Image 1 (cartoon, rainbow, N blue to C red):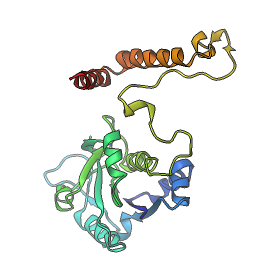
Image 2 (cartoon, rainbow, N blue to C red):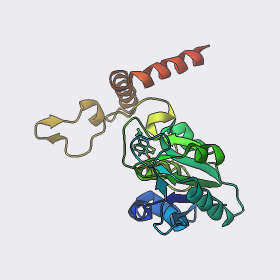
Image 3 (cartoon, helix red, strand yellow):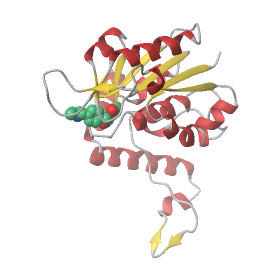
Image 4 (spheres, rainbow, N blue to C red):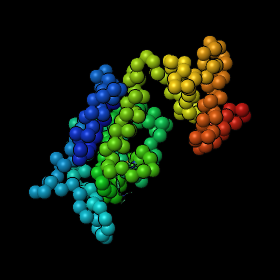
Amino acid sequence: MSLRIDILTLFPEMFGPVLGTSIPKRAAEKGLVEYHLTNIRSFATDAHLSVDDKPFGGGPGMVMLCQTLFDAVEEVEKQDPRPATRILLTPQGRLFDQALAEELAKQERLLLIAGHYEGFDERIIQGLSSMELSIGDYILSGGELAAMVVVDGVVRLLPGALGAVNGAADETFADGLLEYPQYTRPREFRGMNVPEVLLSGNHKLIAQWRLEQRRIRTQHRRPDLWQAYLRKEKQKEQ
Ligand code: 9D3
């Protein structure tokens, strides 16, 4: 059974180019995933087609209404009997990472809800008991790009989504180290040379050099990943 991904958004037109390109497109063509886009505004009931309103208690910004979102979720969920894992994209959410991408790739149905500019009425989060996800500590103008990041990160993990190459073990995150530096032709470019060891043909030496480069890079660039890696290595020893 393929993965069904529903996306509720005020800007469905933002998703076409991303879902219609590269791996997300290929995965859909192969029948590994189905995308269903729904415009939240089509569930607005008043003359102005409102989807948000001013916050009780005052303050800046607008807050997404419960009614439109609950109606949209209930209508979309009715379209298929499989229960959906509901995901609300919010800056307050749990950080999306590779481990979570792998979990989500095992589900049969995901329902992503993206807001724009504003927050959700807390009763949406409560009442839909959905998972809140953030893609990082920076402010976007809406949840749409975050939803696309989650979709891309998940879909590429579906069995058969990637070509023969690049298939299983992704270098980074599989074992917690960053990737080694890579080179292709020419051997010299504007005075910069490919490291001699890579031209040596000595596969054992090349593997050693690459591992050392990965360790050095991770230590310098990502002390957080490096500490986690060291902890894992220690556990293995015991
Ligand atoms: C007034 C407080 N702002 C929160 C810091 C309001 C606000 C700003 C921007 C509420 C939502 C947004 C739009 N961002 C998202 O919806 C979002 C997001 C993000 O901005 N960064 C990282 N991950 C995500 S997931 C959804």
